[in-house]
Image (spheres, rainbow, N blue to C red):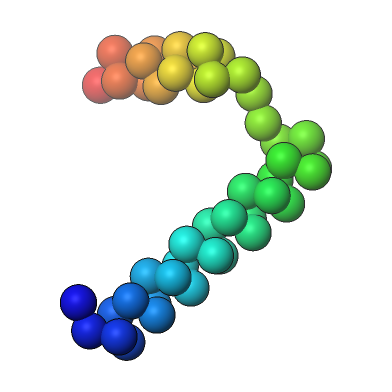
Length: 46
């Protein structure tokens, strides 16, 4: 992997972590069991 590709991946990961942290602080989260249940329902609809 080239250093520039590694830098891009690192920045993307940092951005995802920052967004996750903001969402968590804003109360935009739910238990894993509920999240996976919601995903299962969405998959079953298709």
